[in-house]
Image 1 (cartoon, rainbow, N blue to C red):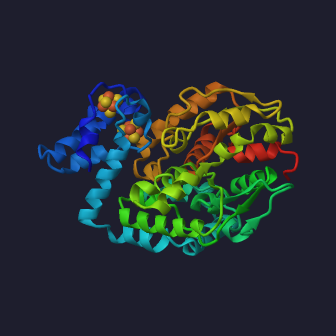
Image 2: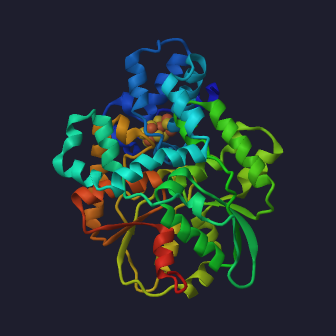
Image 3: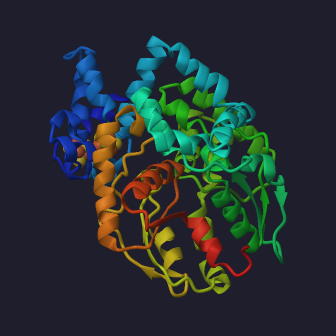
Length: 414
Ligand code: SF4
Ligand code: SF4
């Protein structure tokens, strides 16, 4: 790890009020400043890697709100993730981690097959029975949590259904590659279908390579830098062989990871790849007037939750809001602390359920106060977490991906 990144912290504390774990615990060791100090002391040999120290570091959500607040460019979340990667490269992955990160995640076909039992669980009515009878209470807590987060699954993944080439509607203005996030394709396929529809309606030919693989974010989360680099090499080669103006994603987590490929692989092709990556809101914002002309009235009160991977990691805040405000009849209501994490953070909501629930509760309280009928966001982790939270506490609030709402408003969309 670059020691300079650690000593840049001048301990001003400006990051503290933005850190979700500090807000819940008021512990210096659970703050960005404290985490930087802990890693620095470890590097300087003044602290040992005790279980307690690792526990404190593991509380970090990697939401990067601290990076947005820091005047010195320190990114505590990224430093904790780097530290985890370095530690894992020394200690190696566990059997389970190897199985998931090397044998399952990089293989879309295996991932899709692994969802079949869950689909059957839902379609057979077993899920309803299990939930009604509260049977999951007899199983380990993490399993109960995972089941509770499971939304209704589509019958097939989008990757299996979508044509590799979707032609432009009307005059073609360019070609984009569409990056299918794993969870978007497997769980939120309707939102990605809407994304492709919007792009083609704006005159883009959309290429969705079927052999693309996971962006590597789960590998990064698991401290598996080797797996991340393999994923990056594969995707760079696949999209490099297509002539595209942009590589578009509607998944905040994927976008943040794809834009960082050139940090992990130091060559021209990775820089060229990362330079082409755009969040869908960035591409739609380029054609906002044209898009607005296609939109029909939606008389709804709508608010927007900034996914950390879009606001803090990619610096995209204005585009989604501007696009929503273009929908005729839509009343936009800004959410208080809209860019505060919802507590999802990959598998954090399963690994640290209590803290995750407290962070989610703050978000739900602000949604309630907003009085919105629809909550919009653009990251599958947030969608899963908020769907569960809304179902439990605010069942009248509908949750939509940004592209779903825009496509709903679009005249051509069916
Ligand atoms: S991480 Fe940045 S904001 Fe936080 S204490 Fe250090 S210098 Fe200040
Ligand atoms: S990444 Fe998020 S949780 Fe981690 S230190 Fe920064 S603000 Fe706190």
